[in-house]
Length: 394
Image (cartoon, rainbow, N blue to C red; front, side, top):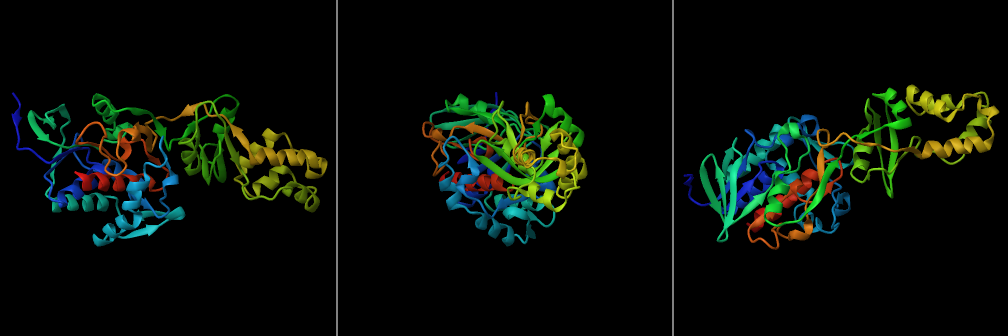
């Protein structure tokens, strides 16, 4: 028979970004918190993020930079715990940081500093950490949750699901959060890989020969567009612009690429007047990597000098180059996805506290919930903000 430990005020499943933040906040409010993870170390995804320097937040955080079935859900938590709040915590711990492009904040040194900071905050709150054991049983009766770990039953009136999504399975990520939520009767928005490279097939396979070539582009799908770098890979398309657009992309729909963003209409006509003996390939090579310029010119079928091309054909080439259509045949899946879109339905949770509306004491935070941020620190900010919201409510 399993033995029973003294009860806790809250058991938090998952010692990632959201779980660590939630535990620290609740612990420092005087709650007796047990933080559990099946991994042998906390914060594994934090450690590999941002190339090992952890892109821990984004100064431009706003609710419209998050995807969710309910676009308003994230507003409350994000408003109550801002990037500046987390930055103040970072500075209080003496961690050096710097801003990169587009409001992204990184550690000057290793991401380990962020994990150590969060563990230090947990220690201040007297949080009990239980690592290296998966829960063998989770039960709920009489208003209490019982979690069996290594043959020992721990119980509490509150249980927080902070186990993330299945992205990056080599780090031990699984769909455990969704299975558990469904067991408690909560709806789950179908999860899918997000911030993930796209794969190409059919006629687009020829572009795989450009593997390693990158260019500044505008990538579009539907009404959504991002201007950042795109990278050709041996499987298809990647780079920040593509990762961003992947979260909005639906299977079977095209992705449009503007290879020359910012060019005024009629620029090829002007080039023809100024340099009639130039070619389309040469014009493209002035703005794009040579291999990409050659491939685009060949696909357009314009090898002649500009003077031999009519203005109409030049206009057509311009239009094609500004909206080159790729139809990806899929993504590289959870193995390469930075995050998971979908998750515990926001309709099931309070946006103020992250507590389930129909199950007293059950909470969902971070990536486990159907809130997915843009690339560049937004998902960490959601982890911190949702973790704080739950931690203040426990």
